[in-house]
Length: 99
Image (cartoon, rainbow, N blue to C red):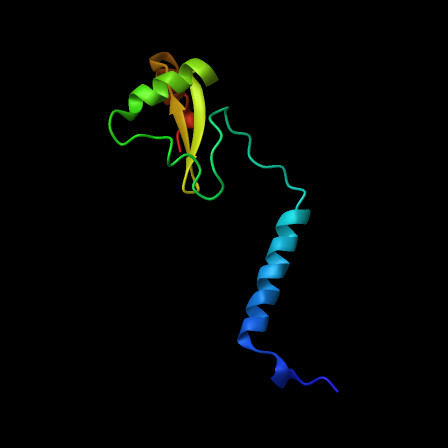
């Protein structure tokens, strides 16, 4: 007969992780549509691509490649970069873009 005393905390943690991973695999929800941008690494995203000194130069180069609105992800934080003053002003004047 199976008894509950054989189940440890580690077993419960592994079962929860397994259920979570299965849920993520079979989740049919479409991810959020972000603007194009450079591909990132799993978990860390584009953290290695963004320089600490003069990052706007890199954003300008990416703007030429991906367009005036681009998306990067740094450690799970989604960042939308606007490379056009006109687009920034237009978005600032429209109420539905303000959070």
